[in-house]
Length: 150
Image (cartoon, rainbow, N blue to C red; front, side, top):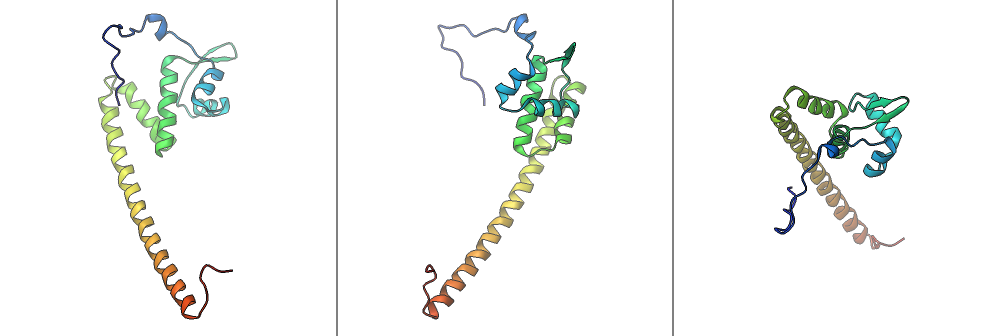
């Protein structure tokens, strides 16, 4: 989804070099993405993000922030951490992002196929349970028992 263009009378904001140099603390990122600092440290331990260190303090770049955003979105979509890492690492191989997008497309299609298969399985289970429900209700009524009673 693309962002709406600014009104014609307002210039679009052009990032300054200073914007690209913005650094974030772990607390800022945790607040922004509604995760715990422990979650962010876990992603660091898994090699998904690599913040700089100033002494004992982790300092996250704009790139780390973007990677964290991708990680969390990937998790919401059901990708494993290994898949997310592979997708993120593809950007290091091809800075155009083409390989990364192709692989994301391929894996997304695999996930869609699996989800559709699961949905079909669930639909079949629901159908079977409704048949059981109808049969049991009919049997109870035939015996003079209200299926909804205690």
